[in-house]
Amino acid sequence: MKLQNFSKFLIILYFINLLLYSFISLSGFKNYETGFWFFRIPILMLLYYISSKQRKPFYFIGLLLYQTASLLFATQDPSLFLFGTISSVLFKFCLVILIVDLIKIQNKLAITIAAIPFFVIYLYIIDFVGFSLGDSYYIWVINAFLTSFIGGVAIINHINNSDPKGFWLLVSAILFLVQIGAFFVNKFYLGSEAIYQMVILLYGVSHFTFYKFMIFQEKEC
Image (tube, rainbow, N blue to C red; front, side, top):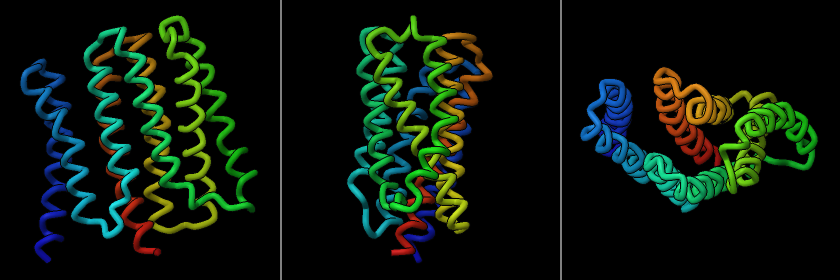
């Protein structure tokens, strides 16, 4: 019972942190912004650790890779952008490993068909800003493929199994799909504060919804 209450506390803390981070970054208090940004993923890791019985290593590794990618992107250093891109694609690879059990022989074709439209859209966006990507161009293509694949798995799984696990995975995949497009538009095209805030919120909520998927997936085992 104490762990359940602590889990609820961490969930509230996670969203308070997310909202405060968004508000502070909008207000321009850079010193406080870094602190709120840094603690978001550790809060989620602790939440998963106390809520999960399986505690899958790839989930922890994926969150650490995401944290690393965010840190490298935040430096605004072009020389570190490539390493941030690599960390980001490895994070997506970890997510694919975590959902691979949902792929069956009978749904492989459907997943492929569902993923193609997203991949085509991403290729268009990547090509549009390709001149800014430099050596990371093909790594972003891989990232787009993995993200689209996650979207395809989520859609087909939700169609075939309308359960809480499928719902949370679908919501998470949709948010990841939208976020990567918003990230590109903000970083290489418009540079809008509104889009930046959307990226913050989308990634924060998408991480939480994927966590919910992980917990519901365990309950079925």
